Length: 129
Image (cartoon, rainbow, N blue to C red; front, side, top):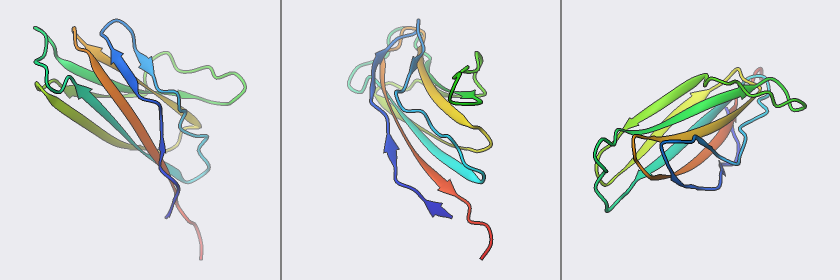
C-alpha cells in the first residue's frame, strides 16, 4: 500500500441538535483501488456536564457521483453514533472505498453542544510488481 499525506478539515465548533454541519474538506475523488481511512474526533464538552437528555453525536457520510453536479445523497450512506459520556472526547475511525467523493457531516443529538475535527488519509493498493 502507498500511504498519502494526512489531510485535515477546519474544526466544526458548537454544533447543535437542529442542523447537521459539514466539514469543509471533501474526501476524494477516489482512484481505482484507493481506500480512505477517516477519523472524526467529537469533543462533547470536556469540563462541562451534559445537559439533561443529551445522548451523544452522529457522524455521517454522504456520496456524490461526479464533480460537475455535486448532487449529494440526501440520506447518509453510513452513520457512526457516539454515545454521550460526560467530559469525554469520542474518536470514530472508519475506512471506505468504492465511492467517487464523500463529505462528512456531524450533528449533536438532544441538546448537546460539541466541537468536531476530521482527518483522513488515502491509501492506494499497489497492483502488480
